[in-house]
Image (cartoon, rainbow, N blue to C red; front, top):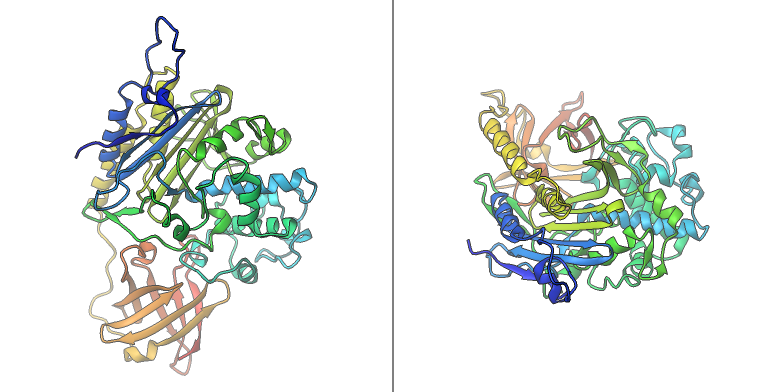
Length: 507
């Protein structure tokens, strides 16, 4: 495949990768010489259609390039200005909006959230009376993931999410451990709205995007699609072929992951972060609140296998650890065919951002560390190559695994029409089960799932759209009451919990 690389219009000096004085008699060797070819080869090896990456050092952009393609047909090249969904990189913006309001005295990190949203209740009961914004933004609430609540749900408002929250189980006590959770960030956005008197999107645009000159950064895929330079998300088929997937509504996830941007648009954001809340002489966020967002609050897991990395910690919208003895502040994102990574090395005054239009690829993180090693003159750790070796080993192992099988020679206990109906869970919402000439079909959050008989009254989920595979092979178990009538439906909505019981309300 022919390589395509485009240099952003950040000045002619960027073409060489680093900026040096024009009068210098001798230039230092360019640490990024040859890196373009290395990056593009990594992109192809990781089966990623398109990649963009940008770097700032000491407050100045020194590298910004795009590789590969924006679309599945390979007709539109990626540039440094190409818009991608940035997914969970949005979380740092949400923490920043809270920090702005803490600076103004309208919010406090440790005040009970019910001070601002009195109707907030959780399944943990009275234990959660002290739940704070610091808890919500550091993923230490103990609330399970429950991501299907918001996924593809165009109708879910923050107010409705509040009403569902008491019926979504927690998996750990408050402040006991790290449990990554998008719902808490969505509701943190509601807290911002109550304090600011305007939507989270409007406040973020007025107080962060506009002052930073991030005019092309926005809040929805439909808005992104109106831009002349945007990427489509992709996923890998079982054949390992990348396939373009449609842009999906993300309004419900809002403050947890709805932003889209380009790597060049992210340069001012990184500059402000490395400036501890100051951008080009103007202070947007106080030093105290900037440091508060980076301060480690909870361990994210065990000791990493890589010897170059320390144990991971989480602050407020940022992950923190040490890489080769240097403090690293970073975050990744993965949503609807896009993967992203922003990495800051505060003491080295370096920021790196990388976007890819492939679901779940680690390439942005690997490429960022490979670039940093070069930039700092370190012996290469070869993150991308090591990751590829692990991927290949994992794929080989997976190929030998025997998939689960149903109990043979069973049939449903009754005619398929008896399973038709509407089933409701107070936390997760509604499954609608219908019958057509192809058999049973379930619909949840506008996602149609074909229900194929598995065994007895259990059915196996087969999405009818390629990009709905979050429900692929999910089991649906119908339950009858003592009178023999189907009264409920059990569905594995979250792998951390037993199947959720949806009660039949009609049909």
